[in-house]
Image (cartoon, helix red, strand yellow):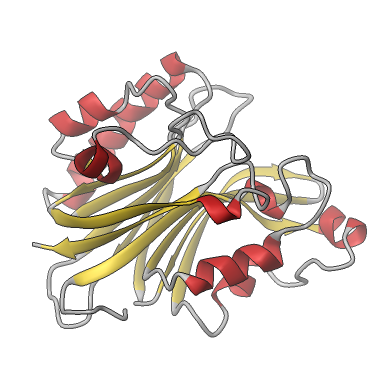
Length: 250
């Protein structure tokens, strides 16, 4: 990873809305790739990534012919890990983690709260150059209903306790948590949300054209938070805004 100093790195998370505009009228995946690369994040957490969709290729004049993780990471991010959550006749989508450093790929754990809404918890481990301590990375996309999110959060914390063993950890993604019920149990598990630490409240990221709800989060444990930013210029590329943070291993 390209750090300004050893142990310092940047993280970005975004629900990419399957690579199409908020109203599904146009493909945005090429613009998304350009915008994400312009910020040079060392770790990228993506939700609703349309890894494969033959209908998109037929519909849009410009749509990558390769898997989207390969298209996004090519010649920029060293490694990637994809977890398929939903499959259908034309393809599938899920969560993904892209990294400038090699990833030790864990599993995509099924945390679906409802049959009609398939969700996964994607786990990978990476290390910064010159730093021996591993960083556990979890990419999530929680349920639309609060009762389901409560069950999912219990599962997520159990998985983290088992897999990360108290070490530096990032949990990033679309929490669908507009009433901010997630932060209290995450705090009890030792996690701090980057915008809550710096501004007192999670970032408002949805809907992108007029963000009113704090859906997207970056929770960290064992990491120092230096800065965080909402990517407002991306409002026409997805129905969510992306967020980014600069972190340091401590």
